[in-house]
Amino acid sequence: MKNIFIASDHAGFELKNQLLPFLRDLGYEPKDFGAYEFNADDDYPDFVTPIAKAVSESGGAEKGIIIGGSGQGEAMVANRFAHVRAVVFNGQYKPESGRYIPQEIITSREHNDANILSLGARFLSEKDAREAVETWLLTPFSNDERHVRRLKKLDEIHG
Image 1 (cartoon, rainbow, N blue to C red):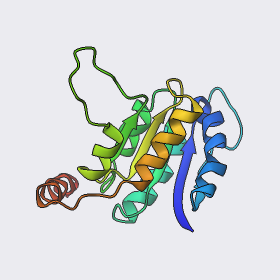
Image 2: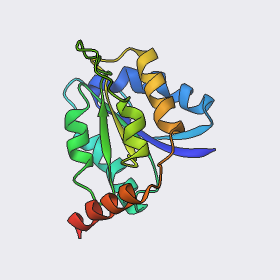
Image 3: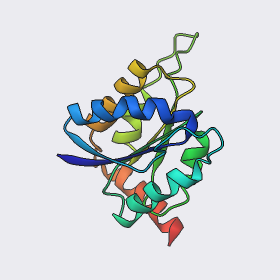
């Protein structure tokens, strides 16, 4: 089984618990960083920081899923760490103008080698979250030279 880190604050607590068996069914062994019980007054940095540290210390090789109300604050915390490339997903936008917009989950993996998926539990159904997680986990990084070059520049920012 492949490891996957997972954590949530109170806003993502229910969705995290729904995703744990789903991840196991996909062949992953989730390492749960909490929250372990619902506490409406908890703070997302307390749960996101340990995952971001673990992914950072792996040089970006490990992957994690963090879940909060919108996913935005959680991604902000995670992206403060070297080698972490957290992407927010809280629903695919569909333009009214008929323009084509590529699915951001796929692009985040193929182009950016995102290693943390930050989900907005207040905007996603369990079904939408499952589809996003499965797509994200199954989409490989393209290894295109231009994307590798850009990721190296990101890593240089942290020194």
